[in-house]
Length: 168
Image 1 (spheres, rainbow, N blue to C red):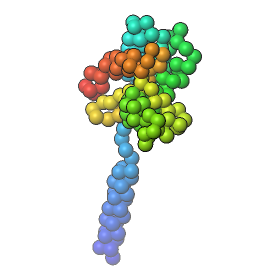
Image 2 (tube, one colour):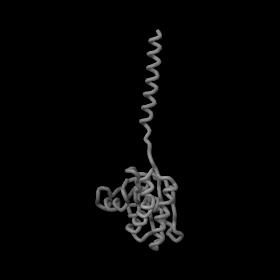
Image 3 (cartoon, rainbow, N blue to C red):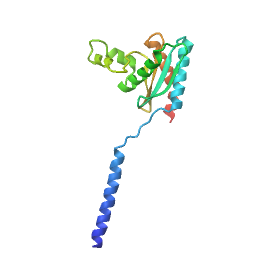
Image 4 (tube, rainbow, N blue to C red):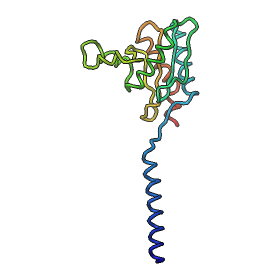
């Protein structure tokens, strides 16, 4: 009888441990931008736009697509804030920079229908932010004269935090 109880106790302990191990495998650890990193990137991007004479807005989203920081030049158009957020969200959601998405989703192409989805902005200015190979957020810029100029400002924002992200 003692052996049966010992066996039952061991079996229950093993099952409990197996259940705990199994539960851990159901959770995925992830890394996302901090608000401090997002602010630093947004400030650098807006500073670049300001130096170039562009009245723009900049948005940085976390890996879930939620806005962490939005900055706007006081003279930027009313549409620039939402467009910057949506460019960042688009880059993150489709895991591609929006300049590439704009090219691959032109009218007549297989992916052209994605332009009809809510919040998708297939124009330059949205870029992914990666750290150690993981997608951790995205930046969107709107208001510069064209996608190339928006991209240049977004790149300046990413460059401002890239060394810090890789060192963590």
